Image 1: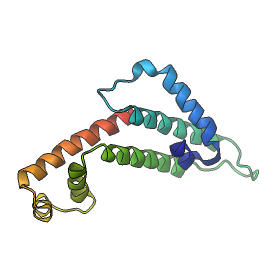
Image 2: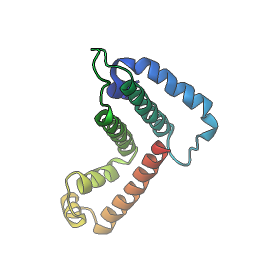
Image 3: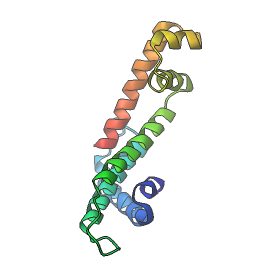
Image 4: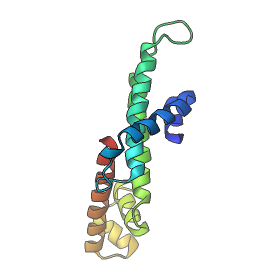
Length: 145
């Protein structure tokens, strides 16, 4: 519901119910080997939110003017859910692996710089980055399916 609230605002409760109904109806399509249940639900919420925003864009605005241009909000909806899925996936990594991935991509450090900063062998840093990215990719792909 928090994800839906961030994306669509006041219609979050109804949208959350639609997400869980869609998940129930499509439960046979869930494959735990492709990602976590949280990622799967976040993906459903993402698509339901975008559908909701598109539908809202076709309705007249409450002020009686032209329908709202929802193009920018659709992009934001995707970014918000991607950010939430990424945050969730990062939290699933071990603290050591998460720290290495964050230093590599958010602090923009090289593998050698991370190795020096953490006092960790260079090969270990490279392994943490590679395995961390594989895990993150699997979570993100599952959320987009």
